[in-house]
Structures are given as structure tokens and as C-alpha cells.
Image 1 (cartoon, rainbow, N blue to C red):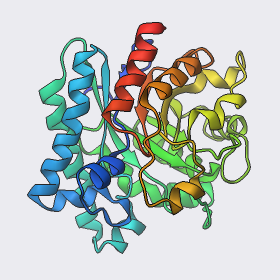
Image 2 (cartoon, rainbow, N blue to C red; image 1 turned 90 degrees about the vertical axis):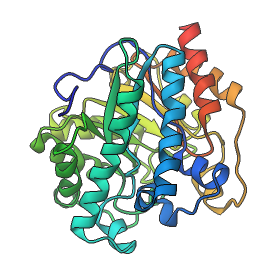
Image 3 (tube, rainbow, N blue to C red; image 1 turned 180 degrees about the vertical axis):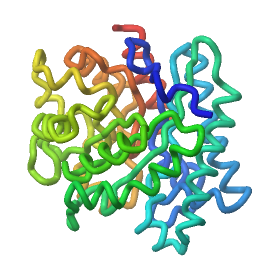
Image 4 (cartoon, rainbow, N blue to C red; image 1 turned 180 degrees about the horizontal axis):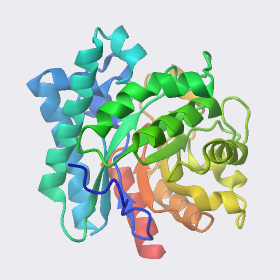
Length: 315
């Protein structure tokens, strides 16, 4: 049974950690193969399952250490129909994989949750297409229809919410928000931006958030930014503007490289964990509701720990 679906504890001023760049860790640090960056594919065998378990336990330990909340984001960013079919999954097999992913993180919650570390389970929803390049753009209606199956599957598990990660155009985000609302699942929307702080479509982050809120009557519980370095978007965060209050989460890249540069890079750019922490502390002065902290490309537990320390001890 879902524990926090009707009252998300991160809608408070308490810090919540989530994980870092899951693909980064699994590929570069654990030397595992992830076809199409599909972490959920590891659930097919014991070795992969244990690698995922080890990964999430690392972040559970961090949350306990710093006595903060914890959001367990399921490894299902690619577990939607098109990507699943590409990997040979039938509809039923894909649904089973999504359920198994939630079962895994629920076991992690049972191990690490306590009074000071409330632990939320989030079903991760990824883009239908490429996370960097929105080539085949759906309408909001098409997006709702497409993503409903995965969100409905999550609603039948212990997932407390869903989080749409690496959204690169508004219509897909609107469709996901509507699908989640129709099924009764809280939803967070996380946009990605280019080095100019705008979505890959050229739309401003402000316009994207305001457009989704207008189209869905403020359906998302909150918004996030992911898969971008703080230097890419810090200048568009004009202190005092109301739309900034809707942003609660940051999952930044370790590298300041553009999406195109990262896509073409064969080597891991880990950036500087301490500097990344300092940059998050500066972001928290502009984003008054920022309390969900994690990482994306190039990051691992070291980066997330430095971010946590910087925001927690200097806020």
C-alpha cells in the first residue's frame, strides 16, 4: 500500500535526498552494460538486481547519515512502451518490470526509513523519445494516452508518486501531468535545459512551467530541473519571481558540457563535487522552496553528499 500518496512529506521545508546519475554509476563505475541506458533491464538477472540494490543502498545510507528525507526514484526512466519494445519487452513483461522496480525500492525503504528519514517511493517516467533532442513531438493528448499505461501500473504498486524526468518539451509534460491526475497519482515534472537555460525547443523555463500549470490547473505537486549544470540555468532564476516557488528539486549534471558534447564524449566528466555543492548553495538563495537534491549525468554519491552538506549546513 502506498504510504505517502495523499500527503507527500517533501512538500515541506525539510531536505530530501534522491540519487545521482544512475547510468553513470552503473556504466562507468560498475562496468555494466545498459542498452539504450535502460537501467530497468538489469532486473532480468540476479547480478543486475544486486547492482541496483547496492546503488540505492548507498544513497539510503547518506540520507540516514545526514538525518534527511529520501526519495527513491525507481530505475524505470526507459520503461515505457517504445523503449520497452525496442528491448524486446511485451506489454505484460514491461508492466512486470515496472512493478519489480517498485518492489525493489520498497525493500530499500523498509531497510532505511526511520523517523528522521521519511522515504518516498517515486515511479520514474522518462520521455518517449530522446532525452536531449525532441524530434518526434506529441500533442498533450497523445502524451497522456502514451504514458497512461506506465503510470497506471505504478498506481497499482506501493509508489507514492510519479516523477517525469528529463522533459524537453511542454506537450509531453502536460500529457503526463494529466495522466497522473486522472489516475490519482501525485506528479512532479522535471525539465531539462540547454546551456542558455532554455528548453531544447527554445522555450524559456519560466514559460514551460507556467504553460503546464495553466493547462493542468497546477496539477504537478512541484517542478524540478535535471540533466543540466547549474551554470546553464542560474542566470534565468530571477529572485522574487513567483514561478520559482514551484521549483523544489535539482538533479544537476557534474559537467558543464552541453548535451551535444556529452552525447559525443567517450570519457566520464565528473566535474568537481565540492564546487557543485557550492553552486547548489547559491541556487538555494534564489529557489526558496528547493529541498529535493540529487544528481544526473556524471554524478555519484560523492556529488550528492557535497550538495547535501552545502545546502543543509549553510541554509
